Length: 141
Image 1 (cartoon, one colour):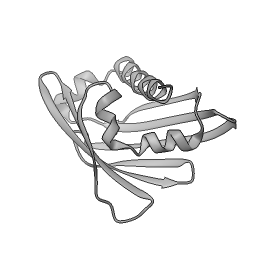
Image 2 (cartoon, one colour; image 1 turned 45 degrees about the horizontal axis):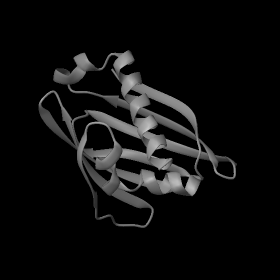
Image 3 (cartoon, rainbow, N blue to C red; image 1 turned 90 degrees about the vertical axis):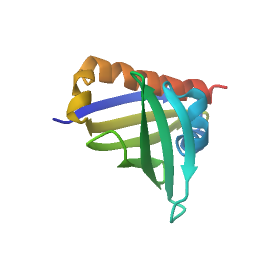
């Protein structure tokens, strides 16, 4: 069964800065909760950014390789390899006024059986909120 997370939040930053942060895989390890390592991987086009994130969870590490496809202020994310049976997400950025942007983040995923016990909706929502707040905090620096 697919799990989902969706939140809309206003950020005090312009869409270009947010877009740059979303695609800056190198910086994720410095601000994203649970991210032990992160790096940008080579990609075939200017609209595609590939990255590898390493997360620590319950004394294990999980590698998540994804591809970010950018079209204007929209970013579609697909897992290439990783711990999810299925994973896709998107960021939709809408400029509100100079220096303010509405960010809509949507994700849907399915975990393998051995991780499903950690996928209660309350846990999914709390993790999603922590990730969005981490992005907002990084942008305010």
